[in-house]
Image 1: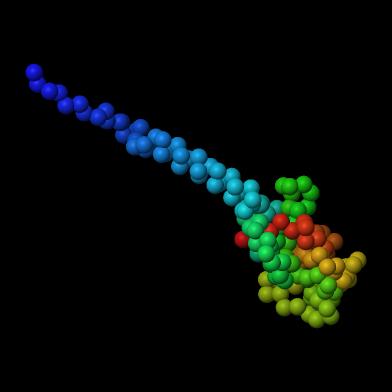
Image 2: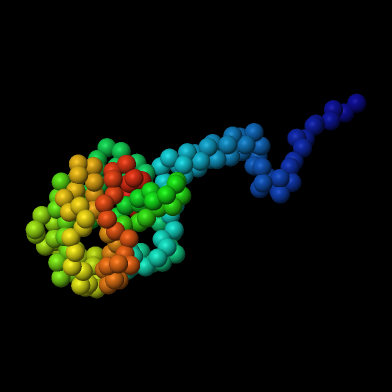
Length: 174
């Protein structure tokens, strides 16, 4: 009698492309990838859609940006940072620029931002405006930041701006 050699069953090329040579290892990789993605997008990075013209020309309307939710876990927002602010609920956020920090005085004179009675250089502003106003509470509290969009050519009344409490700031826009 001749001994027969048993050949291992070869998998089709389609099986190998879909499941790999080791389906168990592929399943483990998929589970790890899904868990990592869920944790990342729930707790670290959050996508936001820019809606409206208030951040033009820095961000185009209907563009998708990402918010780093861990950016301010160890330090506070700084002047010039673009932040996402929780407006209502978990999903509606405003994207604005921080222009004044806690304890500072804010006012707009002849279209120029003044903080503590000093005009601020804002290189991200491309078109001038003619805003003249002092906010309702010009001196910010210990956990308050003044935020405003970059499109200052809009009428002041049409702009969503103002004081944002530290607890409402979700993170830094990337």
